[in-house]
Length: 486
Ligand SMILES: [Zn+2]
Image 1 (spheres, rainbow, N blue to C red):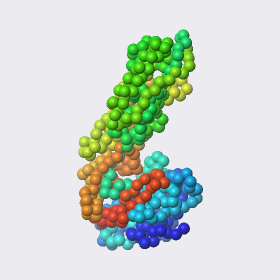
Image 2: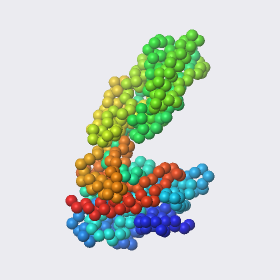
Image 3: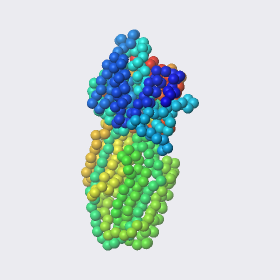
């Protein structure tokens, strides 16, 4: 196909971007793009190194006038999310992306464009290929497999970054400078199941649904309902006030990084009169939840249905302990940042409760941009599990990137952004994981920022890149590289 970018500026950036769109690079299948980068380095006689996980760093000596400047690292990821519209035929392992220009935007025919983070790759190659004066030594790091779990950054070897400063080019909001992200960990509790037998009772299923859920990082401060927390309140009330109502099962939620949208509980009861009381209580709770969530989650729904008979249910003591555990497990924002306005510092998500074999598995996930605060919230969740005599497992997780508003690199990037865009940049952090979090753990003292041109619809076939923002971002980058001198 034809290269639609022949007349775009900065021309070398766009030519590299076009070449990259022609190279298949789904996450975990980056061999072809890494080979391309290796050949790029060889043909220009630039020093390069690949590490065991497949990341590659290419280094370029200082240009004329930059001999006394410190080395700066530029970094982006080479993999892309491969999504397509249902009516499009595309083998992402073999076929090129088909980019085209639509007004001020670049898009791809029916698929993701891969500007996340191909445009970062293109800018780094353009700088390595340039003869711009007054630049200190530059190392361009290209990581693999960002999109499916940051495994490239996680496995990065210790000599792959030698600089004191790193500029990550994986942001998609022009005019915003990112200076921090959250680290995360999962804390999982296991509650052994005990049953109790008795005279046959009727079964009813209570179902909480209609909630929005969302991402446990990005959406945690939106005060949306947590289906497990809501259903727990109903069951707690039922067990507290009815000795003859028993709990058979309770399950809800799905992924560890999603706020649970649905939960269900099976209970058993004696006769019609009791069923009517339970139905009234369920209706009352639906009204209570609708009032409490009238702004953030107005679609909440609680339903109840009859469902056959049983003579077996959860042991009463065990059930009461389980419900109290679910009641006390924290969920939501735990602390706000002290230096960045409206930024969640620490949170926890009560993500799911699932019945597996003879135990309940309760998954929770904690996030914080402060390592000590992450440990603190994990221990709080852990303590709740331990008080309920649950077995606890904690996974390794990934580290956060603590914002440093006093950073020299940030000061330079903010000033150059203001000059090029003619407006004050927004300085932000996000409550989710970024590759920079992993770098900050491996390279303590490394000053970092993350910037990038304007993109919309990333990770979907609607992904698009704002053409003039590429020139502006590139200008900011070059100006910053020329200025860094300590
Ligand atoms: Zn990305």
